[in-house]
Length: 327
Image 1 (cartoon, rainbow, N blue to C red):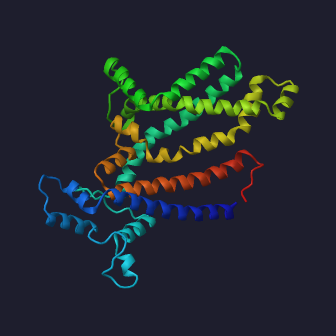
Image 2 (image 1 turned 180 degrees about the horizontal axis):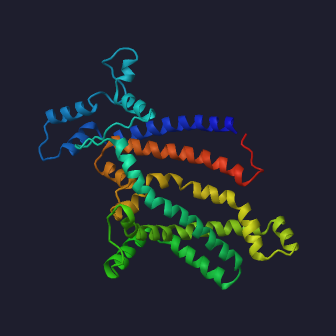
Image 3 (image 1 turned 180 degrees about the vertical axis):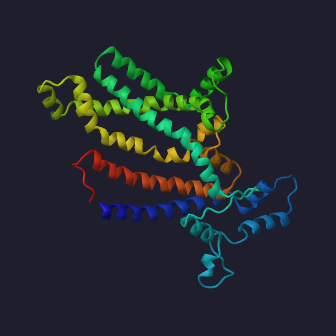
């Protein structure tokens, strides 16, 4: 297993290098260091002297890809690409390009806790609710409960999460005044700020996940081991919980594992709409301000978490199914 994990993580390093290079290329295809300087300096009249000073302070005064003024390896190393990429691969996040020049590493540590308070309840409740709802539909398959439950799932997955947010904020915050419209607070006060985004995020994903799990459970219901279990006299509920659910854990783990990076990086949409100062809102601020330092770090962290989560999922496969071997 260890050889397999080392090989997977080695592939992951190549993926991270590719993501880093692609992010750099795409960002500076759309923007230039001069554009970034004008946006961050602000004002109607920005002189070239101010632009050159801003670029010099942040290391953007060098060529992006190739420095013809240098000799030997310096033609490649004395560039923005090399200086920004190497430091990032060493997990040196540096400071933001904005006027405040924030320490990105400190911001990530501070905001990650906020994102986790929102994402962890969503993750756990999503898995439990989707699995339980799908099992309920399969238990009452070919009945009105199954039919109307499937219709509800299709309706829920057809509605954008923005609709849930707008309606939820209007109904529960404006009309009923049960929870605050937006914001965040520490301690136990955070519950009243998080209960609505957690509920709305759960509703926005419940239809998709429950419908997927229902299909997987129905496929397992036709297996030989299910017919054998029924022949032994086991009840339908026992067959579902003890046999079908256990044998369907691998696709469930795969689906749930794909959400793990969002648990750490936060939700862009919900954090922005509800004014939650997590990593999702941090990414939105970086994109809006053309802050390449923030964008590259968050894209890199997202790719890193995907690589690690996929390796973790493979290990979990061996725990839930002894037939799986990592080779």
